[in-house]
Image 1: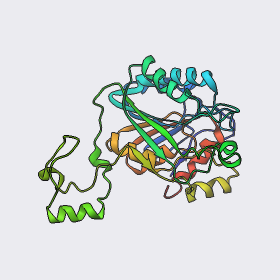
Image 2: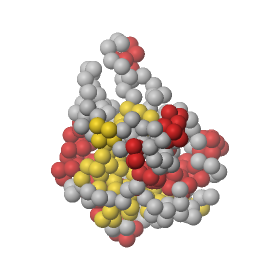
Image 3: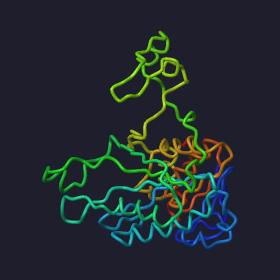
Image 4: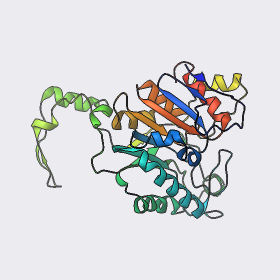
Length: 311
């Protein structure tokens, strides 16, 4: 259950005091740039185990939740990332979703997201641990002009999620994110018969290891999750309090995957672009401490709904 602190008046900015708290976390209403300059941020230096976030995408036109465009976006996100790095533990991780971008007025994709990735690597001490793809199987067709009207492109249905760390060996354990075995794999393990031996790729497949029951299969780096449902408690809370729901919500299973994969219970998770606070709710559910930074008070207040029952 969330506990409010201070005024909840829309538009109020509190850079160093949380607006509301839970047993494990706190939400601040301020921009990440202002938060970084605060005493609260100074106390966090070297204390954060995971920064998980989805900043506003480099879209071709401004959106209600605030986003930058073109090279202004690249410069901005690189500078923000440089300020976030000192908050990480030496074995911590920064996981960032960077959406695709299209060039304005024509059916060609912008290289800005890729240039942003390279600029982050070149401008910080962060290493790229792995690339993930979030495939949103239920995403609406877009860009609308080229996909729906002119029919000369297929829908853009995925985004990239990049895992960075200051070390090649950050805390990580894929045993915590295993997925259920397929029926065929279950039968294979049960029978103990595996087609072991050399493969055309020159890999040597050992029956000893591949026929062993490890309680689940290692997941791939493509996360296939639709984004059609809305948390009932979040929707009801916003409706009852006359609050706009955040237009760019992420399914909770995405932050849950990375929180389980890269942290232990009791670790600290930070989301510097919290939106409706999906990350905070996921962290609380999994027994992690968390901090959420969101500059729009209406979205900060709406995020309380994720803690009014099951998220």
